[in-house]
Amino acid sequence: MGVQVELVDAKSLVFDSREHGFNTELGDMVYIRCISHFRAQMLSATLESIGVPCVNSHSVLERCSNKMLTTLALERGGIPTPRTLMALSAEGVPQAALSLGYPVVLKPLVGSWGRLVSLAKDRETLNALVEHREELSNPLDHIYYLQEYVRRPPRDIRAVVVGDEVAAAVYRVSADGEWRTNVARGASTEAFEPAGELIELLVKAADAVGGGVLGVDAMESSEGYLVHEVNGTVEFRGAQSAVQTSIPRKIVEYLVREVKK
Image 1 (cartoon, one colour):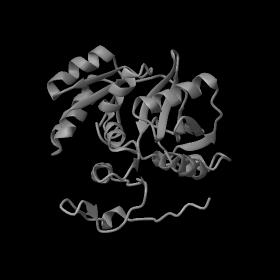
Image 2 (image 1 turned 90 degrees about the horizontal axis):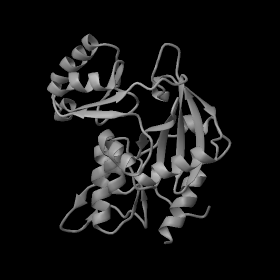
Image 3 (image 1 turned 60 degrees about the vertical axis):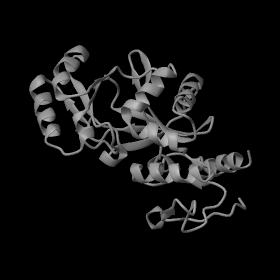
């Protein structure tokens, strides 16, 4: 496309606050692809402080890296989501679970690939999960994010939203014996063409968290589509294997439009 690009390993970067810069030139715009969400947040914050725009922005990365912050943004944006409760200590978990009704889904505030996402079918199981979490050293693990268990087909929808466009969408179909639909958990992908109402919802959800290049996850429920997660550093190898559209080209076209603004 005639765009000059350079691949930079973020782990090699050093920022000097007095010099107001990094140990290498980083161009007119940086597209952040760090797997580490903490590294991505620090990188975006420092880049923006010296006037280098980032996709995604620091505020979007911060919002999407924490499930409760994502939920709050979606609720403010009028996006239908699974019912979610947050307990600020282990003491509040039993009452939150009773309010939701079993089974309940327990998720870490920060995390990806379905790690530490658990389904508690009864109080005994939930108590065991909480007891385990209380032994972990990270204070974030002692704040409890619980969601209702949505009865749905054995799949969800992953959409790669680029700006105001759904660049691609796929079904993620659960592997045998696995209720989670993460590709990292063995789920397969199938091409899926969203209709007008769903497209509008997916774009609106992306806009609710601040927009950019995002992975928006939705579920089919008896009440219609529910958006349950937005990923700020979306991985799309699985989606690209199932669709004909070039997701990278859509992203580059968006970056070029943004840098020319």
